[in-house]
Each structure stands twice: as structure tokens, then as C-alpha cells.
Amino acid sequence: MQYKIIRSRRKTLGLEICEAALVVRAPMEVSDETVARFVERNRAWIDRQLSLAKVRLREADAQPPLTRQDILALAARAKEVIPTRVAHYADLLGVSYGSITVRNQRSKWGSCSAKGNLNFNCLLMLAPPEVLDAIVVHELCHRKEMNHSKAFWHEVLCVYPEYKKWEDWLKKKNGTTLMRRMKNGAANADMQ
Image (cartoon, rainbow, N blue to C red):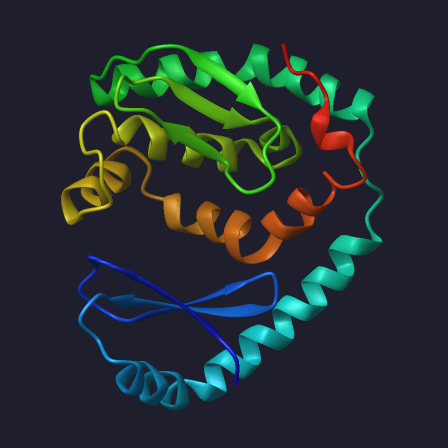
């Protein structure tokens, strides 16, 4: 079985399916042999997830691509909706933030810079409002913890207890379909 290994300062091994390909996330010091044994031990899960991912990719490719006009309309709507959601959750968290930018990215749903500037993907307008709220909360919690530590996740779940449900909706079930609609050059729409 082929897979890509991404090494980092993490403490445990993890598996991820990215566009029907297996990615193993591993601590720096873990040997390739240990990674191979981990992959083999999880073979049944991997096979199931790869099959599901292939089905999702076929479904995603059956969706019509977004046009430049579609993306501009989504961006305009996002610029109206997202600041309100950010202000609401920033008050609940007791955090400040810098600028809010809407983008049409092919891989990220949101980000928070060290200066507190927030970026959001216009495709969030195609998801249920609960998904948008989950991403907003996630990024605002980085204003307290610029990492994904236990303290960070504690903040997220205190403010948005259903976070995991909506993250799964986006990342495990529907995100690939939404992202793949950005094909055929429409992703280059001018967002300003």
C-alpha cells in the first residue's frame, strides 16, 4: 500500500485520507518500520476509508463547477454574513480580531494569523450555517491558543459543543465535493 509520511513534532501516529490517498502523520523520531506496522494494523479501516473517499470523489466530480460569477456571488454573500458571526463568537470568547478576508481557496476553510487577521473560504456559503459557525469558532479560538492543544480544543468545545459534528460534515463528508467545484479556472476570480 502506498502512502505519504508527514513528520512533525506530534506525539502519536495518525492516519488521514486526502483525496483518496493515504497520509500518515508521524512523530519525527518514529522509524519507517514502525509506520509500516501501524499502517498494516489499521489496514481494514484504511481500505474502508479509501473506498468511501473514491465514491466521494466521483460524486464531487459529478457536481457542476462553479463559474467566476458564482464565486463572486458567494464572496459577496460571505462578506455580509461572516463578520456578523465573527463578532458574535468573539464576544462569547472574549477575544479581539483584526481584519476579516474572504478568499476562494482550494484547500483551507479558514485561518487566523498571529496578528489576529482572519481568512475564510467563500465556499462556506454553500455549507449549513452550523459549519460556518464551527469554522469561525475554530479560528477565533486561535486568538487564545495559536495551536491545537488540549487547551485549544477545550475552548472550542466550551463555546461550540457540536463542533465535531459539523467538522465531520465538512471534512469527512462534504468538503471535498465543495472544494472540487472550484475547478476549471473559476478559482482565479478576483475577490476584491
